[in-house]
Image (cartoon, helix red, strand yellow):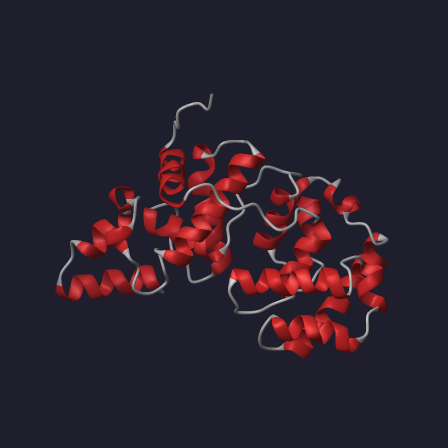
Amino acid sequence: MARAPRSNLEKIVERLASHYGPPAPSITNDPFELILLESVAYLVTDERREEAFKLLRKLVGTKPSEILAASKDDLLRVTNLGGMGAEMRAGRLREIALIATTEFGGDLQTALELPLAKAKQALRKFPSIGEPGAEKILLFTQTYPVAALDSNGLRVLLRLGFGEEKKNYTAGYRSVQEAIKSELVNDCDWLIRAHLLLRRHGKELCKTTRPLCEKCSVRSSCAYFKRVRTASGSERVKATTRFNS
């Protein structure tokens, strides 16, 4: 039997779970495939990204050696399905495979076995993988129970009142992580569930602009809702500008 939520963040995650239902599992928990998943598509829906990734698996394969041996036409078929910048992203897939081969002998398990800070540093050798991306890989592979957040989840937590908005994305990310540290469950399954639910909430209701607060199941805990929806005139403009920037 699951224990009752203890922290405010746990209660928020439970309310999101009640609203959205159990999140669908990630299409992969393999570290190299998670990196490919980031580059196979750009500015498309999750469904389209998964379609492109599945085509890569079927047409080319997802081992570094398979990508390096693939024809340009096959890689372009995949990246064209994944949206704009297809030729650049096809080249990036090869670059990712080359890094995996030359730096890690084709097996990223060696990176996962490093201490946390060094593991993140190793994964950041890949293009488009910053600290949040490296932490997501370490979490979704169940290597380290870290509070990985994407931009949607970060926005949700900032609006809820965790951390402070910063001009620098990395600074804002770290501010939120510090703010939620004492409220986390030290368990990869829970953290993955929280990541997926916060991300979905940010994409569907707590949008960058015109958030659908009237449909939000956590608005009673939301600093954004209290500040913006109860403000008027110039105060509302200032509040909206701050939280939507």
